[in-house]
Amino acid sequence: MEGGSRRWRFASPNPAAAAAGEWSVRPYLLDLRGCLDEQGPRPVIPLSIGDPSSSLSFCTAPEAVEAVAAALRSGEFDGYASHDTDLAARRAVAEYLSCDLPYQLSPDDVLLTSGCTQAIETVMSVLGQPGANILLPRPGYPKHEAHAVFHNMEVRHYDLVPEKGWEVDLEAVEALADESTVAIVITNPNNPCGSVYTYEHLSKIAGTANRLGMLVIADEVYGHLVFGSTPFVPMGVFGETVPVLTLGAISKRWVVPGWRFGWIAICDPKYILKETKVFNSLRSFKMLTSDPATFIQGAIPHIMKNTNDEFFSKIIKLLKETAEICYSEIKETKCITCPQKPEGSFFMMVKLDLSQLSDISDDVDFCRKLAKEESVMLLPGTALGMENWLRITFASEPPKLKQGLERVKSFCQRHLSYGVPLQH
Ligand SMILES: *Cc1c(COP(=O)(O)O)cnc(C)c1O
Image (tube, rainbow, N blue to C red; front, side, top):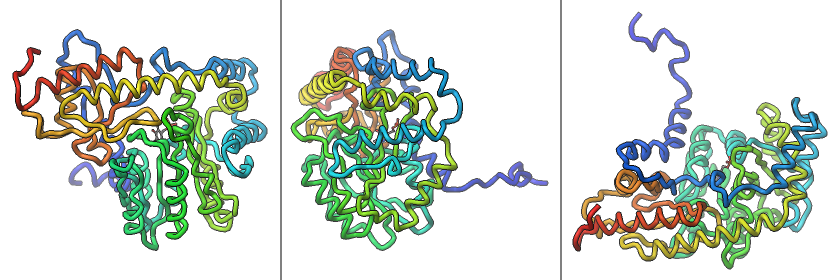
């Protein structure tokens, strides 16, 4: 028998799996850690991936910790989740979301997931079929694309327009959609752009989706994390215009991404989805997959009801401060511009002007050299579909953020194509 692969019947897995995997690892494959190895004594400042849970200023609410501890101590949540536990958790999420909607969600409109990631995976599994296509934003969140590809969908990108506060290019959406388009994904507040859509813009998106006959998948994992002049409006507000699947989690607002609790909310007050197969497929699919950990389900009604407003205001105040630091430091940095001051989420997108730099070939090269010379990590825009842009997270301790951005500034200064290079 020749070659290893012919012996094994599992030798050819789903090709979509390989393609999707490639996509989801792409940001991380840009192996910045490898660049750090030859580093000196300076501590690494990671401003590439947004997980502030390790910094003291961003620790979660004491009420949330207490709720989880109490759930564990009670001994009632050590088994598989009972019907009552699951129902109470779904009810808590339905009530939490309904506060901002013109109608009431019922527990039956909510599916629990293991973080927002599983919510993305679930909707893509249910909607994916050969021949279907889905509209995703550029720049975007890599897991939307990875799961769409994995589930056999053709991905079509519409642009977010930096000059218009990163709004959706609705003309592009109209041009991209056809009879096989099943959904449009929007992320609001936006990762990576830091933008927050106005009521009017969301209303236009809803109108467009309605006209084109596709549903809206709204990734609102940064819901309520806004600190500019635009308030957060959930897409579900437009559920009468177009059916909306809202994806969310406690990961970002409560700063506990490791707790793995998220949801899909079916915001469809006119019951349009109920008459299609989507509704039943979502429910059947959820029966096949794993729940969030039972003790988190047990804790969630308390977490949602008892978390103090002071905690939320503290986080918002901190993000406002760090976004300000980030914006003003970047303003002083030659060769990098920020088209739009962030108003929400943990991130902003900034543009590299390569013409001002002497020995940098593109955004990936910039990030590699920056990691090597300054021990600062930024995410190359290429990983998110936008070459020669960078994503910076400002969900970091203020002094550390400032120090990181000072290093970016001196890196740029040193690599300018004119002027005297500074000593390293
Ligand atoms: C972080 C993030 C997620 C994933 O959330 P988890 O709850 O950690 O799985 C989904 N979408 C966007 C836009 C994110 O930034």
